[in-house]
Length: 325
Image (cartoon, rainbow, N blue to C red; front, top):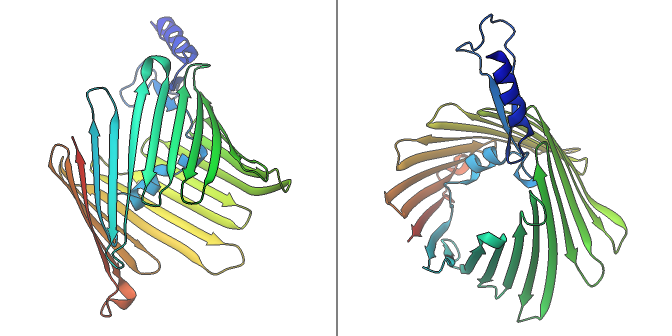
């Protein structure tokens, strides 16, 4: 029996894909499969550099819309074309913004097409080819055009991911000279280490130099980062149970006393309702309430309270609707 399990474990480790399986011995037990010791530990492909610490960021950002009245609409035609429309209006200034996006996919060819337009009159087109030239390889060509000014820009993106590694490289095309953005994330047994850089070919200068280190184990995640050697940050994410998620964020700048600290949490009251709350060291308190009125219709209410100036006003409220048909 032990020989069969060993062969099965080796076979699973050899399979390509998004997950790999690693054997975990249990030194304190004399039986083959103790009920308190898991036989395997499933680990995913490392995230991209921009997604490091994403779980904590989501707890701080999702479920809030301070100072805005926002409407999002998603629909899909019978031919498979997706339409995504969003609009928002500032409560303070009354300024309205909006954008329209269409998406179409050809799964058999690994191709997807996207076009966007916003109220700033910027047109964006994107073509993506994924998992065709090689498993885990994603190529994207992104262009934008502003009719009012005639400004054009283009970007070529490449990403490759598999067990233990996630690579990314973007090239911004500019008349003065392209800028190259590159990032690497390596993962092993829950540990994550990442590096991000940007090189301006016109100036022959390194314009971005960032480093990150993290650890992920089940429902616990730790993330730290250093940007340009002067900006330091870190976050902790903990999923306490099926209903409660918590996060802590800390950031500071070298040579400055400006330290930023925040705590956030999200509690799922039931299948359709959730409560969110966060507070930072500037005494800004944010609360959010999200409720699914019915399938495809979601309501979000949020408020930002200035604890230092509670009686003088300046608080912000937000209202959001998400419709999907």
